[in-house]
Image (cartoon, rainbow, N blue to C red):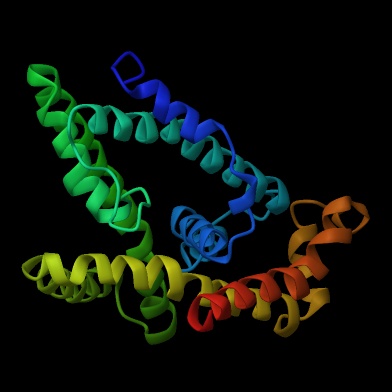
Amino acid sequence: VLTLEGAMEGLKVYLLPDFKRALAPDLILNALGAAFFSLSLGVGTMLIYGSYLDDKQNLPQVGGLVTAVDIGIAVLAGFLVLPAMYVALHNGVEIFTASGALISEDTLIFTVLPGLFSTMGLAGILVSFTFFFLMSIAALTSSISMLEVPVAYTIEEHGLSRQRAVWGIGLAIAAVSTVILLNFGTLFGLVIAFTTRYSQPLLGFMFCIYAGWVWHRDSLLQELRKGSPEVEHTLFWKIWPWYVRVVCPVIIFGIFAQSLWG
C-alpha cells in the first residue's frame, strides 16, 4: 500500500498528531470503545481466559504482555488502513463523511476498502480475497472466545454439558445474527456503535467496581501471589488497586456521561 499514490498523505495523517483533539471527549470515547472491543474486556473474554490460566502464571506480567501485543498489532494495522484510505481517495473513492470526518467502522470495511480494491486491477482481487478471508478468520476466532463466556457460565452455574450449552447458545446467537444480516443497512452500524462505544465501556465500568470495591482486597492479593509471591512489594500493587478503584471508573463513566449529555 505504501508504494501507491496517495499513501504518503495517509501516513502523515496517521503519524502527525493533532494535539487540539487529543482530549476531545468523543475521540476518547471512541478510543475506549476500540480498546474494550480489541481486548474483549467488555464482554468478559479476558475474565474467562484468565480463569483458565495456570496458578503459576504471573497475572500482572501476562496482562501487560497481552496489552502490549494488542497495541503493537493495532499500530501496525494503522500503517495499512490510513494509507489505504488515502490511496482510495486518490483513486476516486470517497473516504469522508458529510461532516468531514474519516469514514470508519462498517462503512470503511464494506464500502471504502472494496472501492479501493476495485481500482487495483488483478492485484486488487488477490488483496481483496486475502483481506476478507483473514477478516473472516479474525471474526471466527473472536466469536469462539466470546461464545465461551456464556457457555462457561451455563456449564458452571446450571450444570449443562458443554455440547448442549454450545449448540443452544450458538444457535441463539446465529438467529440474532441472521436478523442483523437480513437488515444489514439498518442494524449493523447501530449494533456496532451500541456494543463497542457504549455497552462495553459500561460493562468495563462494572468490572472495575467489582474488582476494586466488591472483591475483597486480601482475596485478590492471595490470588495474585500464586504466580507472583512478591507482588505486594512491586510497583504494580502500589498503583493498580487505587487505579482500578478510582481512576478507571471515573474516567469511563465521565466520558460515557459526556457522550450522552454533551
